[in-house]
Length: 306
Image 1 (cartoon, one colour):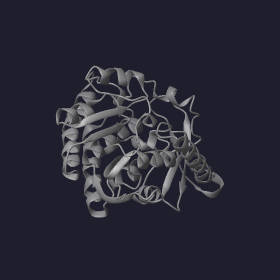
Image 2 (cartoon, rainbow, N blue to C red; image 1 turned 135 degrees about the horizontal axis):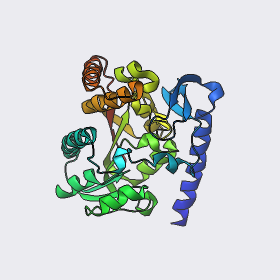
Image 3 (cartoon, rainbow, N blue to C red; image 1 turned 120 degrees about the vertical axis):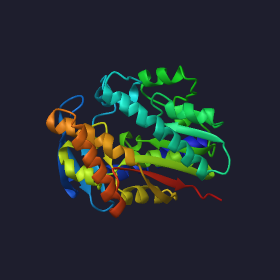
Image 4 (cartoon, rainbow, N blue to C red; image 1 turned 90 degrees about the horizontal axis):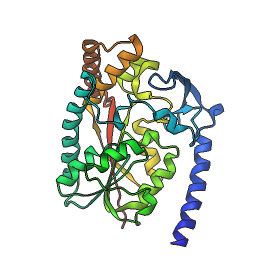
């Protein structure tokens, strides 16, 4: 155990150096200036690392201050609320998406084993997977969301460091990687946890999508400063390849264009223009089909350890 901890610390130090280099704004182009529309109303800048086509938020909140940016009744992934029509529609679509995610995982694995969901929120996905005979465990830092999940019978560990090496068959991060302060450190940890021939599924927004370009600074999926990183297909492939993990498939999340467009309309005009949002979401999926650049992607990443 001591030896593994020493190795991990060495890797973490190296990872931190890499991210200091990535976040050297003097070497990167200003991409956009974006407002935190949902919580603080503060303004943040986005910088573009063209080398790996990665955009990042600057300045990024300290580890101590970051939780305060999640303190909102409207932060929908941390609540099961169905107070408004928007929340009801969100949860209806989410129920369909959960089944699609489970079907995807079952198609990728020959047998059902241990599934780890990092950033499990209120536990809906783990609850669905558990009913389908997966051995499920989650990690969720938000106490409010975690308390809701516990009532559903979802099992948690405090940190992934509590889990053994090569102990997980499938790791999922549904719209979570963009929230992680040190992405390279996180990928090292994913690699440690994954079994030989295991699978990682990463879902993140895509700033190269039509709806991102159409809404610009009002694009809801920038969600600064909660979203610290903004990924492209090139960035995901590059970051995981560095740790010997292979991107084997990129899949669209077609519902996301409608949800994100609806929120973006609210940020842009002050009201939810359902018809306009539906049109932009539809067009984004059409353009996405032509250019293979959807509002959000699921990245299927395989571990081929011997």
